[in-house]
Length: 76
Image 1 (cartoon, rainbow, N blue to C red):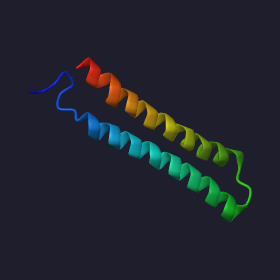
Image 2: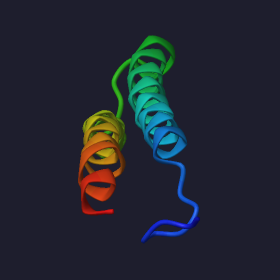
Image 3: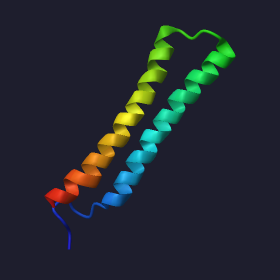
């Protein structure tokens, strides 16, 4: 029987959200560290982009946990 939100698998959605958030954190960290290693001083735009990727990854992972792990299962 389908739930209120269809056949949504909450555990898979949470795992995928955490993996996407972790990938953003990793790409931001690696981009910033290798950019400084290879090119020395990066422009302000690149520093901002890599830092935003790191913070965005944390936000994506937290939202995935709260939405798919807590809110949606409770409202079903």
